[in-house]
Image 1: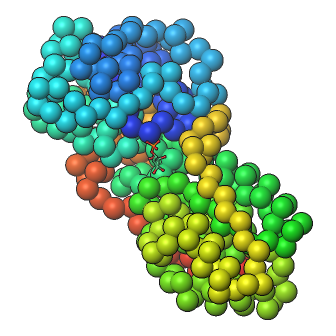
Image 2 (image 1 turned 90 degrees about the horizontal axis):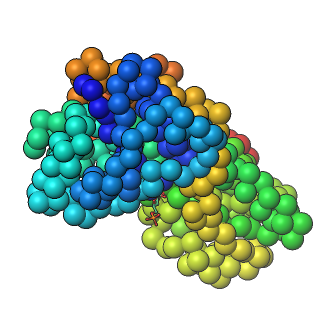
Length: 324
Ligand code: F6P
């Protein structure tokens, strides 16, 4: 391996820049070249490349977003798109790729590897934490801290006005953000796709909490929750059935994807970048680097894509006990 291309693709997440920095500097450390590929696979198709040395990643370890920009490329899903991308890589002398993103990014990387026998290494970057083979994806820890911070602020109003707040958080089809940030922020109930609480039980729980002397409550709901009502319909439903509650809704949205990465995400990004490049140099390909029991590990990309990250059910019990 003489020249590594690095890209970020899919939804951005805090820590992606720290991972780019790590890949670039690990390449420099081992005296190999590194090329930044802009706008994910779309930039690969268009040959939107830039040489990157250790000084081109100064002052980004603390920055959210991605300096390489990101995109979800539909053209890369076609054989013609991938062929064009391959031609650009060959022309630029790039002989291996590090792709930073979520399962869509890994799926693209794996198909590309299978078609052209091109070495690919994945770094999991998404706030959703929905990738198999790592306890943490880049950006997840930062997103949790952001959500907790915001709910702390919402709690001030909830308690001043004796209100019930429904706070909707991101996570796509996974409830990791909701469950962990919900416990961290002291939520009364946490609604996640992995566990259908049901409308009746939600009402019962809210009634119980009122009866126990609580005057305000926070309910965290994952965007992918399957309770059958969206967060605004839930507000109407609760107000209709429990008129004693004054309900407000807060949809946190993309603020969860932004901001300076936490120390945890910066360290994780640095470790994963080193492992990704050094694994390529050892001749490995089609793996995702991840964190398992605080060790940096390799998981075949195929497993990372197909495997399911279970939620920790003990956390549901802890959440129940905490809302007593
Ligand atoms: O995968 C990250 C994520 O922020 C999800 O939590 C969310 O469902 C989705 O991306 C939003 O995508 P977009 O930024 O394209 O609206």
